Image 1 (spheres, rainbow, N blue to C red):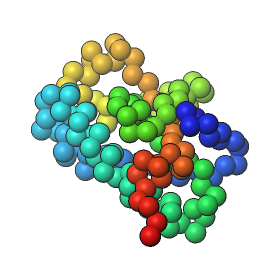
Image 2: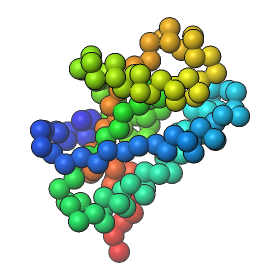
Image 3: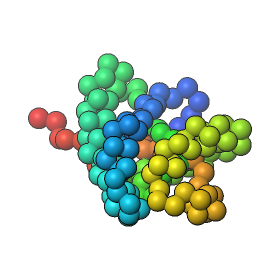
Image 4: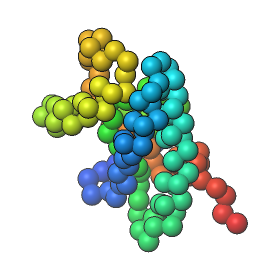
Length: 140
């Protein structure tokens, strides 16, 4: 990863998910893609301190190496601290594309034009150290 952390087979990761129903309620009435992006960005930004706290309080928190998610909506993820990594397995990438198609169709104003730009799902990864540095609170 960009901070030098290496993930190996058998490393313990925390898989993160956006609560798509709640997110869709927030962006469904918005027609501007930039505004939709800002809403999604703020939602993720606000949730990451909670993810950090969850890991710090988890019984196996010391073993957790990173957080990982999969999304087709990866613009702005680097500013949040994530590394964007392509999914190399074409079958898994295709499965995830089909799986995430409904959220993609609802989240953009003109989905047909968006397909021409070939949005593919990618991994979003952030090391625990980077998460704690950006979103953690100093221990008291």
